[in-house]
Amino acid sequence: MAKDIKRIAVFTSGGDAPGMNAAVRAIVRNSFHNDLHIYGIMRGYEGMIDGNIRRLEMTDVSNIIHRGGTILKTARSQRFMTPEGRKQAYENLVYNDIDALIAIGGNGTFTGALKFSEEYPDIPIVGIPGTIDNDLYGTDFTIGFDTAVNTAVQAVDKIRDTADSHNRLFFVEVMGRHSGFIALHTAIAGGAGGVLIPEEESSIDDVIKLLKRGAKRAKLFSIVIVAEGHQMGTVYDIANHVSEKVDFYDDIKVTVIGHLQRGGSPSAFDRVLASILGFSSVEALMGGKSGVMAGIRNNNV
Image 1 (tube, one colour):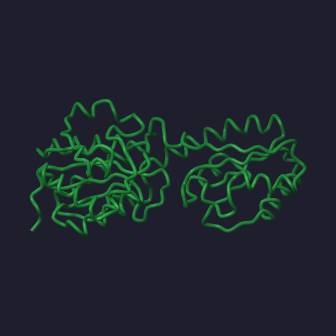
Image 2 (tube, one colour):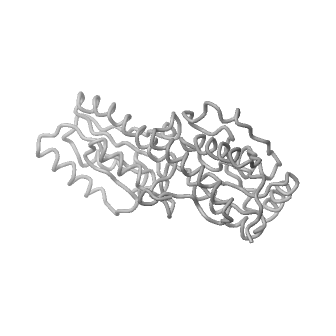
Image 3 (cartoon, rainbow, N blue to C red):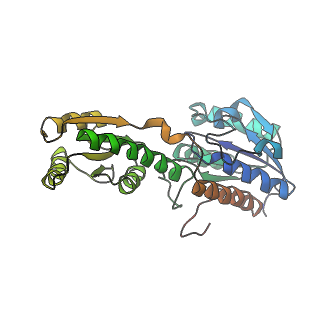
């Protein structure tokens, strides 16, 4: 028999992703629609351990669908990875009469959620994929990925102007952890000359061959997108190795887009995705589900 859900707590954990606020908004609105009490846990698992839990009202989520970051704040918690930390978190949830949890985050968030649900199965928990890396199994897209790609592409568009003007080769590093989704999509949409991703092995010689093919076509500048998790080393290492063997550009530069990809107003796609998954997470809990993620595959939730 499914547990009677009356009080839900939502939290965001790990790296922030554009669209998290839109998901929180949808969760709060659907909870109110179903006469449920909804609470926010501040700073993820850290707040759960510290008992930083507060009631959320409709006014808390007014005018936030377009905002980046997360109104619930976020953090990475080493304490939650210990049995003592999870026990303290559980006791705080019981003290606040929390019936169920919604976790918004990525790999680390879901690892913690799985461990917690195994130890304390009396509190159902549903996950929402919120990470710019787009590296979670079970969903075609994660919240924040589309915005991060758009941010990276806008940066590449600007870099192209100066690369063309100065006949330069640019190596542009994008985020993604151990995944190449951001790099691949940025390279395609940005018209890059090449891309280096963790999923495909490549060498400096491969990069040289690629650049020489472009030079033979009288291409005087180029842009290579590098995923931060690529196995050849840092983007600076790659640029230095290439500079030792390539002399047909006036200069070689490196740009690391960095945390710009985490910030900014979420794209329309991310707002819609987050709203759908936020709504669906509440529905899943009311339907008696736990230990699952609200994802989207082939346009089906």
